[in-house]
Length: 263
Image 1: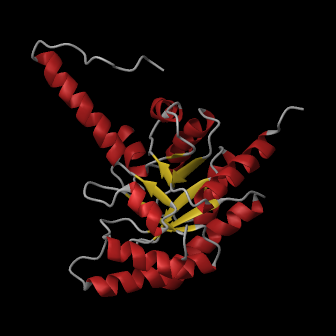
Image 2: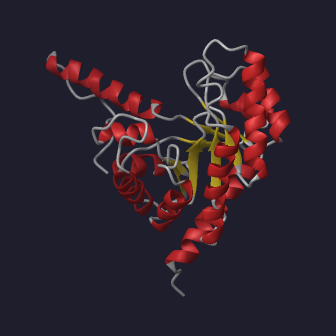
Image 3: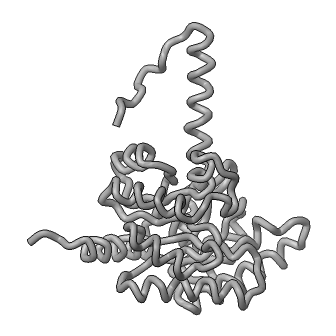
């Protein structure tokens, strides 16, 4: 019997949820369009994909921060979801003013997980955002994965690190209490911060971004982290390779050996 689109969506959502709960750390190499999604999906060991909102916006000529219209973002993540059989989590920024409806629309184009940012809004408002996103997934009848993001470290400024950590813990616990799957704490986190966050949230509940200088994936797995993503850094790697190749070509060189064929 042919699998219905709804059944397929539910199965991908359940798969993504299980990948987050597994003791093996989930690494998602962020993508921004169909060709990057297909390239990463074809690499052995890739079990799920995640979009990067900054990268999608940049590829379409917009600044980051919900400057890309929601319709364009939903269309972009929908094209990515349609290009693979793997579960796809979408970076939906702060929910575009209506996280519940934004998540509902994303599910409608095949997305089974999402990042929603708190942007350090008052805690009650941020909790309401996350709860709306959770309820939207429940209403669609799937095991939707909410990677609830707190910007406590990103927006820390010159605050006392202990206060920043305490606020990240408070916010993360509040998001988990309303049904978030994970708490995403971006920033250059040291081992002390990662250990404290895992202890506060429980194993396989913390999601981090790896940037130059971050802890190695193997160590993060040992510490009980659920997920690593790479945000816009993957697009920057690709653009750096493009710029390097352009310099070589303009200087009379050749295309690098081992260049991937068109996908």
